[in-house]
Image (cartoon, rainbow, N blue to C red; front, side, top):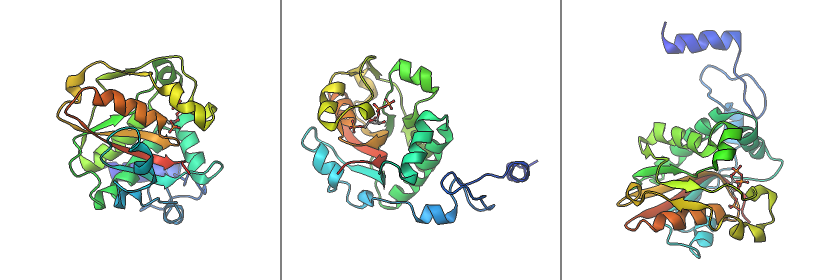
Length: 232
Ligand SMILES: O=P(O)(O)OC[C@H]1O[C@H](OP(=O)(O)OP(=O)(O)O)[C@H](O)[C@@H]1O
């Protein structure tokens, strides 16, 4: 039995539906229906990866090569519901699907040119245990499927004990994550152009703390990609 026959068979038994509008997906639709896909609030940042609101913010903190987020994020929006489901309602597959969409959009802009390694932003062990997966790794899986770029989860740990960024006002976030990442194996990063991948970028404090730690390895370039952009 071919896998497409098998998936069509499963589809008849339990038709897949679009997680945004709830409508049944047709045979040639995947994850989102065509209508919801068209209405996604794409940022277009990948067209100017060195000159967009994220690059402007992060450049104050560390030498960043390229930055982009796929979608504008607003609380209560369809995108926020997707990302909440990814993080808190056991939908790791949403990460992979969103990673695929990101990769398809960014690849045509040449965003991945020169990038050698995908690095999912590490979670604390406690958060990983509670959630059962790292949502950023799931996003990386989707990107890797489309681009063929390898993923590494090695070379860094994240300490327990800091509050979730989402629970804090923006002016407390930099201090909260400043010392939580720890480089454990510089050789993983040396000679690489690392793309740090996360689900949402708001103030940029989390990716900045992670990037600064990776930069301690020396001889490394850093770029940043997230699904949602919740900055101003
Ligand atoms: O750009 P920033 O202002 O730093 O905020 C973005 C970070 O906040 C969220 O994580 P959070 O710490 O809330 O939760 P998590 O560790 O459970 O993913 C999100 O997943 C990013 O990692």
